[in-house]
Length: 277
Image 1 (cartoon, rainbow, N blue to C red):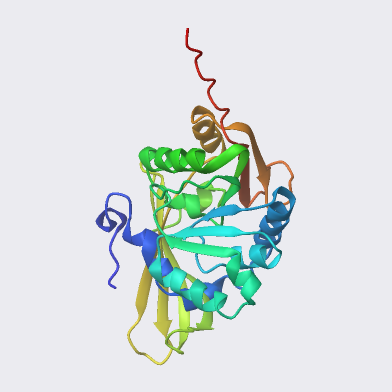
Image 2 (tube, rainbow, N blue to C red):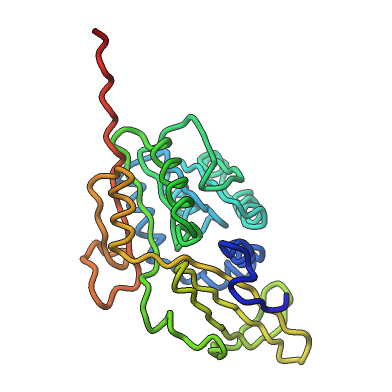
């Protein structure tokens, strides 16, 4: 598609929340080597036990290793292409693994079930597609409704850095040459960034230019930028307890070198029922 500016992508950059996930083959190739978060969530699920609810389950990059470890997972995602890719991958797994993964298409802000879970996770920047306070509140409301008493919510997001948010929107930042798995073409890959400091949304145009001179294409990705203290406050005022922020999937304190913020918190305490007089 032709490139638009951030204001043209909708009030919350809705197209930029879906386009990156419309090509599961590229997604799988781009993040194939990303393992630290997978190992972290597998160990977490093994320690707490299932069933686990994963919001934005995607192509199962995290969920499949979790169910292979013996833990039952319920996965929810809004992207039909990503769910289709996950179902194709799941069909190649042993029957006992297939039975431990339950998939449904839904929006993390509104999807409902009567089930309760001791652990709810949302991995790899999925919460950065919650663009407004109302989005965040709707998501937290669903989490609270689905957590078992004493249950834990764990998610992660990239730490915003002023230098990254101040990149020149008129400049493309070159990356590498790669073989696009969908078209089979060798392409020059680059990125262009635009940041809206009022809405705290960053747009990244992922640009693909075939070296054979054929038509180039671009894919938008929009991320809300949450700062650590902002996220802690949102969770606090939503009633979550024991809010812990750690760095880079290593259970260490945040510092100036942190890349990924990992958030862990407990479900709010249930309100005591009033006794009848």
